[in-house]
Length: 232
Image 1 (cartoon, one colour):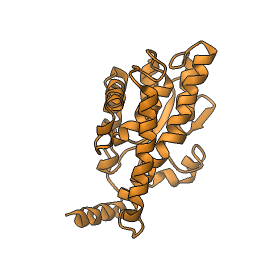
Image 2 (tube, rainbow, N blue to C red):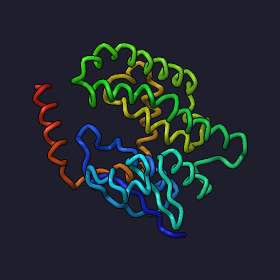
Image 3 (cartoon, rainbow, N blue to C red):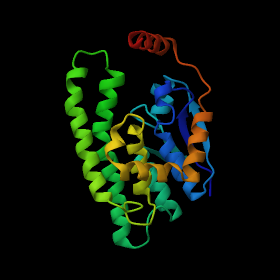
């Protein structure tokens, strides 16, 4: 089997380290035992025509395996799970439910979390950001409460079997683990800890962090400096 290649950034702001979505793909590859190569992009180069041939929206990650080129982390994780015959159960019903949880993580749980990031990080200086926060926080807790009730005291979403659905759900929920949102949901905090304690996750995280060797472009450095000054 040809060794796949993914794309990742060589630098991100400190608050994004360990959160860029190539981590989800790295984790899946580590879980199935598939070595891979990485093409590192400097900030801004993801918008260049060469990369847009791989990713029309100018984002990371992408995945290349022979003639196959994929973008979107969820689609890539699904491909890896199907390609290697792991991370998805063999029984058709259980397999369908695991895929269902993949979609739930990305389409139902993650959107309000991203709204929070926009309001508190990327558009924090805009006049509409602070007034939006209460409704954004309410939607986050609504989703976390629903997920907590469904998970109950299970080890994983489908009982004792870790699937690609758990991989993506843990990847999404862990975005909030340092912000206090999980304090109300002991089972979700434990669920995230079980996922991030997996050796495959730890290897994936270490590899992503080791790849941040670049420097921010001047305009981003200025934005970061202004943001830090406003917070002081």
